[in-house]
Length: 441
Picture 1 (tube, rainbow, N blue to C red):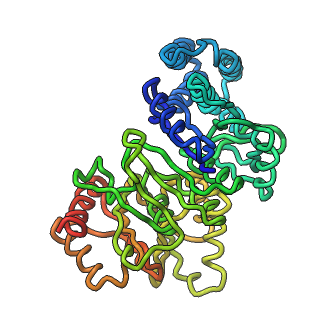
Picture 2 (picture 1 turned 45 degrees about the vertical axis):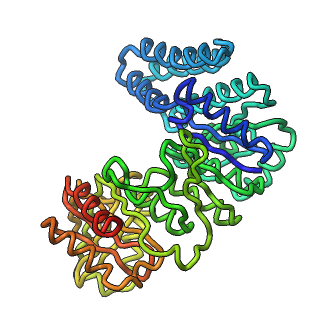
């Protein structure tokens, strides 16, 4: 069997869902298990509805618009327009409660944003049935996906594989499961973080022994750079799990960073494909690459990076100082990207998240902290790039030609990733310059 995950743009309209139906129909012999995101833009609309409720503004028109999006798709697919009415009524009731209370707890927020995937799965399953394909829409938590209770960033329990296997035994036909959402052991709806549908697909693929996990998007695979930045970016035929994980973590938007974990555990290949070109082979992500497939693979970037510089000359030579710093970041759930040290300081980069301001206050209790915001991070990723003679020189030659100053560099023991920071607004030019030098010359 194979797992097919379709993102928001892939199920964003009736014509898109018809394409999805054709893709699934052509792969019935491989026993597809389908995971879907919310209809494109719907999750953002649900967050906007939350904001309207909290700001005591009228939310009814925005809710009616959300209803209209789904009912239009149902009409165009010639499905019962009342197919998701029960969910819409539940959503309406929840919005009323939020507006009356004037607050939205993390638990309530996860419940609120779950409606996008729950409605999307019913649209896709309904369309498959019109094609004569036996199908059922299933909320992921009813298919055994149980997590811890960390709302907005939940992670599956250790025994999730056996829970999924048990729950899926009674399901027949093509299962269309919700991405992104799950439940904790108390029965509360949780979410896996934005973009978590990829992770959901990988969790199900690992639990069910899938031969391949397919991530269907609107691009031809993982590219040598973001095609919105580099016009000549081209798709990659293969990547290693490590390369794909680095790219996802350092800014590539094609795959969710956590997607690799279950796939790596079970050594299941992941393939990234384009719903608009289903016959294109896309990018295959494997545990190990042939020697001739190593080298520079892709350049990625991300913005709104903060640098936290910890200065404590009296404590840096004492045992446990770095542990104290790390403990603060851990306590406030701040993810750190790059770490660089000097004689009297330690610098960390992060995109925030968690409780960055609280973490900074915690650090100030025992050291001086300087914070710089709005930096941009560039990462060049590829197996064994450190073995490419003159590689670093090529990178820094480009930076010199562009007259770009580098603030922080990470090129340590790993053979996969060279990362550095530049100033706000400089990343796009750097990515284009590096792509021209590394891939086009």
